[in-house]
Each structure stands twice: as structure tokens, then as C-alpha cells.
Length: 353
Image (cartoon, rainbow, N blue to C red; front, side, top):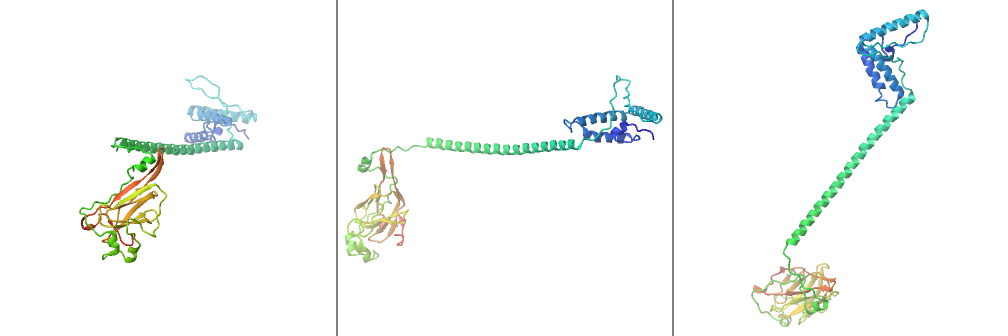
């Protein structure tokens, strides 16, 4: 049996009668498999690629392929007549325009071993993991930059709002500052109250019965006799009623000196939801509540002649300390009369009084 000669056809894994299209397809397949770019650092793949390039260079050129076919026939004839012989690589035919060079030894390209393929797979896995980590890191970095940008944007907007508010406050007309006084001066000459409460003025004074006349001969529509019996005949607190909220230094003066009718008054605490002081003021007189605790209050009145009920707006009693002493409120409320003896305040039901 004649000896088999290893040829460029064997290196490309094609038949000796393969057309150029098959040779070209085989070369592309082997190039994709053993190209150095796909196998970095793999010496065996580089060697195989050199063999494949040399084989394709010969078989893709019709003149060089014919020369290679003649060389194959000579080698096979020699092997048949002389028996097995050592392999002689086919010479690489030189073109007329290029210098003569040494022919690359054509060898059979062996596939890479299993351990080499496993190493290549591990390298690919490492590359994929590295790329994935870089993508994740990039996403988190983008989110962090976005949060930082939003924070600085909000901080800038807040600074702009504060600056505009400061400019508006600076450009607003300033009211004259109240002179600072000591606690003793504050007691001797009361400073303006935090909110001075003054009822609407009566337009036409109307003379009514005095408190004593009212208590002795209560007119129609006045409080019941048992209520009148508990009321004092002169200005002062109602007997038997508790005097609460006495822990402060503030005062409240209720002035009835311009009214010809006695009134029954209750100081109502908004926070506590109940009256804390209850007193009667005779006509043409006034009454001062002392040692009031700071808080929000309103005053509720009963005209002891018409028995009409009314309520004034809420007001504040304030007390605080500063570097010069204790500041507190000395408030004043004046009751005026209007036409028909009614007060210009809010109407009040009997249950709310």
C-alpha cells in the first residue's frame, strides 16, 4: 500500500479535489478557532495559525496549488517505489516579483488539549465577570452622582429662598423699637401689652340700673334669683367661685367706667376650656385681675340689666425672661356702649357662658 503524504489539504481539512469556495470556508473556520486574538497567550494556537496561513497561501493560488499537486504526486510515487520515507515538506514556490524565501513546514494542526480549553473558558468567565462588575459599579456611581446633584440643587434653592426672605425683611419698614425697662419699671409703668384688647366703642351712652338696684329688684329677663343672690353687690370676685391661674405676674384690667350698666364677667381659658376667674363690675368702675398665668383667654359678659350675653376675641397673656429681667403683660379691656345698650362683640349662648 503506498505511503500517505501529509499535505496542505490535510492542514486545511479538505479533500484534494476541493473547489476554491470549500478551501476558503475551511480557512475561515480554522482562523476563527485558532486566531491569536481569540487565544491570547496561547503558543500552540499561534503555531497552528501559522500552519493554516501557509496552507491557504498555497491552495488559494491556482499556480501554487498546481505545483503543490505535482509535488504530492512525486512524493507518493517515491514512497511507492522506495517504501516509507521521511516527510519532505513541499517547497513554497516563489513568484517572479518577490525574492525566494524558505518554505514554512506544513504540519498537521492538532486541536488544543482539554486543559488548555478549560483555561481559555476560565479566562473568558473572568472577563465577563469583570465587565459585569464594571457595569454595576458604573450604575451605582451614576445614582450617587444624581443624589449629590439633587442635594446641592435643593440646598441652593433653600439658600436662595432664605436670601430673598432676608432681603424682604430688611427692606420692610421697621417699627420703632420699644424701650427696654427693668422689672420694677415694668411694674410701676406698665409696658404695652402683647395684644391690647379693647371692645368696640358704644356710640350713645344709656343709663341703666346700678348693681344694687338690679340685685334688689331684678327686671324681666335678668338672671334667676338664686344666681343673683351669689353675685356681689360691689365690684369683685363672685363668692364661692375658684380664682385660678395665679402663678404669673401679668395683670388684666377690665374697664367698665364708661358703661352705665353692671356686668357679670368670666375670664375663659382657651387651653383649659373653662372659666378661671369670675367677677362682677359695677357701672362706672373697673376691676383688675392680678398674677395671671401666661396663656390664651377670652372675656365673656352678661349685662345685668338686659341679661344679654357676649364674648370678646381671644387675646394672649405673655410672660418670659430676658437679660434684663422678667417680661410680662399688663393688658386693659375697655367696655363701651352703643345704641340700644348692646355690645359690639360676638353673640354668646347661655350654655357657652
